[in-house]
Length: 362
Image 1: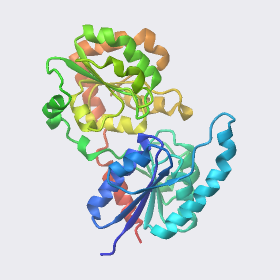
Image 2: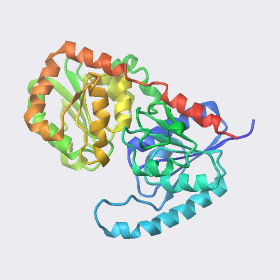
Image 3: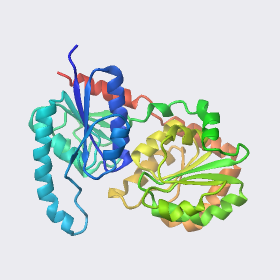
Image 4: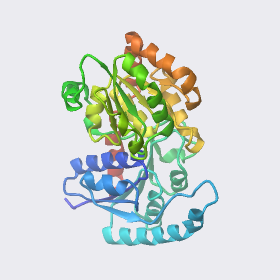
């Protein structure tokens, strides 16, 4: 059997990087001798996270357009031209069978050049409201794997396949890891554990809320694992104590999900997909600072099916304490949310996406 070659591209945030890594791992399990290359944006987090996962990565000199007038925008045409040229060079040298894009700046020039060169391309769109890169690439892509229904207004209907979002294999059966997870984080089995997830970079408003509520959590006998993000770690590490663990980043997501009783999270697409599989009671606090408010749309898709609670940032000061305390005391509500969110999980997403990729191998 000949040796297959795959290029994957996506980055800027964990929401684009981890789906790409999950797809690469599934491809590797099917084709152990295959060659893999990731292409990312220089100076972005994928340049660290991808090598940590055991894959090679090359960086492009690319960044997104800023919404306001800035010097960075003046550089954009130059960066785009440089990235298209470098993408062509990478594709000529590596000669991939298929190129897979999971969104983010770097996937734009690479997939554009791959389609010009006649190399099959697959887009994996995580959100209920697609980003501009994937919308622009969709007309030339061979297959578009989506996680939400009704995206015909953004993408050609005949190219779309509803697969769900790729999630890490180690999240599929977390209940069996609960005892090991509690020991790993040195938690008290007699206390409820609250997990706070602000995304890989962090969420300022969520962090401000948790700081304000720390005294209440202590009174409620709640212990916290607080992922505040790398942008905010220096500000909040002073709160580390016997019952509060402040971290910038969590390596063992399977353990942290297994240990949690209640989760507060942003509503990025990958997080939402993971939380459906994890099946714990969730309070979503969507970021309002994203294109077309897509995090609120992601969260509402779960809330409308009674699978989670939703609080807007504007409601936190007036509503959070009441909502959290009511959930903490109501075991029936916790069970109901867990059951309902589990029904929305798509645990075979990665396998379905790779099935589609395999059909494009010449």
